[in-house]
Image (tube, rainbow, N blue to C red):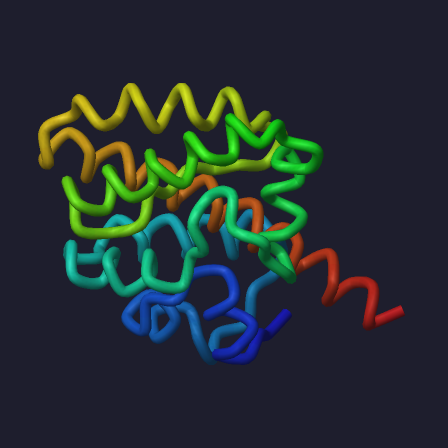
Length: 154
């Protein structure tokens, strides 16, 4: 399997990450995931910030993969949605980037709880959490990418 730069950028918008994976064939999802994880581990913080810039805020109305990932927002009570908006604002003021969480399978209330908890992190601890959340998202998106490639090959 080979993927275009655009396909890979949909999984992680860091140009350095895309360059590390681009142009190579992958036998299977495991090989692709291993390469993706190794590339993520090698990113400097500015590369992570570049990837974060492509992620919508939790609670924003979104399309594409982010829409499916944030399906836990469907039917969210207005007070929870408003608290997420306020929490996102406070988080961005504190850390300088979007609040990132692997939203797949999570309710809005759960994500709000995590957002509030993470506001207490110091910047170094939060960077580690962000890297972990980004890794989870990338892993899920790589699996979707492979599923799509398999579906179009049929």
